[in-house]
Amino acid sequence: METIANFINGQRSTSSSKETLPVTNPATGQVIRQVTQSTEQEVLQAIEHAHTAFPTWAKTPPLRRARILFEFKALIEKNREELAELIVSEHGKVYSDALGELTRGLEVVEFACGIPHLLKGEYSNTVGTGVDSFSVMQPLGVVAGITPFNFPAMVPMWMFPVALACGNTFILKPPAPAPSASLRLAELLKEAGLPDGVFNVIHCGNEAASLLTRDERIQAVSFVGSSAVAQHIYATASAHGKRVQAFGAAKNHAIVMPDADLDATVQAIMGGAFGSAGERCMALPIVVAVGDDTADKLIAKLTPLVNALRIGPGNLRGKEENEMGPVISKAHQTKVLGYIDQGVAEGAKLVIDGRNHKVEGHPEGFYVGGTLFDNVTTDMKIYREEIFGPVLGIVREKDFESALNTVNGHEFGNGSAIFTTNGHYAREFVQNVEAGMVGVNIPVPVPVAFHSFGGWKRSVFGALNVHGPDGVRFYTRMKTVTTRWPTGQHTVAEFSMPTLG
Image 1: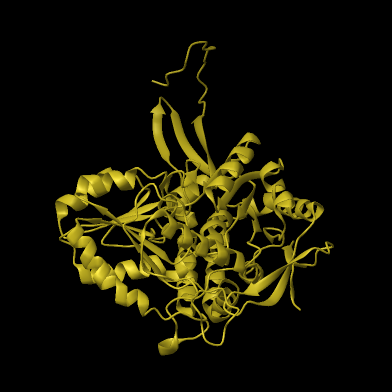
Image 2 (image 1 turned 135 degrees about the horizontal axis):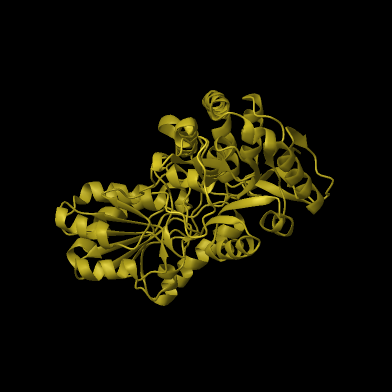
């Protein structure tokens, strides 16, 4: 059986650890690979190689760094089918969704290729008599990324292209259930001309990974996962003097107004709620319908579509492709099914039951059918907690103000949307909703690469978001220089604050 190795100092590196974890194809339930759980010493080895590689890489002109990223971009495009197949085999999402994941990651690579412009800094001439000031943006050093299973290629590519372009070296700790894409990306970076040691991949457990938050050579940590872990990583890494951007859980809402185009809205909700089996931090698990009439019409239109979802393996293509694949693991399947049980017990109306969904020919696959609840209330567990599965809940509110208060009352604030044809309500929503990413008639408002991605409240810990302008700020520190070139004038010591006038 294939064992997924580390990638340290420009080459695959087999761990000395005998501890491995199975990598399972969620569509079949079969173990297809295994991944090593590296020792703490091997994590330290990766850190040391990145630390050694940093000075030379930091001094490499940004244009040369950009050219490597341009070549990396071309290699991703050349190998996109192979990468998509790896994602499908380990995550379970459908093939077109895996290609979409690669495209969204590739957009960040394209953004990072513009790094010579992004690092230009500022210049002010004659801030005082004979005095000029300018700023330079310099890399931090060794930085680390800890990434989740649901986007095994995209989320790493939201981090490392910008970090590398800025002149940092990078250590990636991928998710154990879906480790292969990261290793393949590392090989493509080397093929693109990235020097050894600049990008390293280490597979390890939580205890060994904690070195990335504590080692003094690590200057910054990026993380995506649950809010509890995000808060822990933020607290630990910050206490050790590191910059941190830690993204946690979400419970994204969409308000549907009575004037919304319901046919278009329902199609948008279907993709937002059930795409990737709901395993997205920007999924749409809650719809807040304004008025009972709106809710009744939504239920009537959603019911046949949810019942008709094509659910099965993600490796089919074209007209035969399924719309939704399995969830990531048996344990997660059990968790999602438990939430459905909980919703029934708490009194939500189960319109469509996704429990006991069977896919012909794949009895051991980790499938959950599309599930639809009505009359969900804000005190229910299925409302408060992130399910991360194909479960959609309808909350009923009497008017826009009540709906907005419901959205803003949730502890998470990753993304929110409104569906309406009324410009007044759309503007009020955009101005007053407490969420970091907002959609107007857009169900999954993920920003493009040249804007920044990040939520509010307990969906994020740290001041700077990922990719876009914030990504460049996060992976650099500014140095402001003030210069005066003497021309023979005589000066005396100044003991008061200089004013430069």
